[in-house]
Length: 123
Image (cartoon, rainbow, N blue to C red):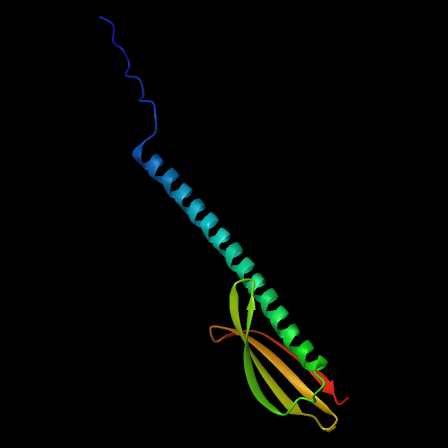
């Protein structure tokens, strides 16, 4: 009678499979977080561009106005690319009475996005 040696089992153990699944899960989570960060950054850039358009349009309108801006605060809405933004305009005097400082702050749902300033002289 011939004695046969038992063959080692082929395949992976449960521990090896679980370790591989853990590595894959960590890699997928890291990839998801990276893509979410890229999406948030693209949205911030888009919001900043739209806010800059609103602020620049407001300041250009103040510069082109034939009337010297009065000191005080006001606000107006600005619609850009389907977004409704709010622009707070602040006019302050300067040391020279022939000039006024005009600030335009753009907000989205009360959250400040951008602020631009300019100085307007009396014509």
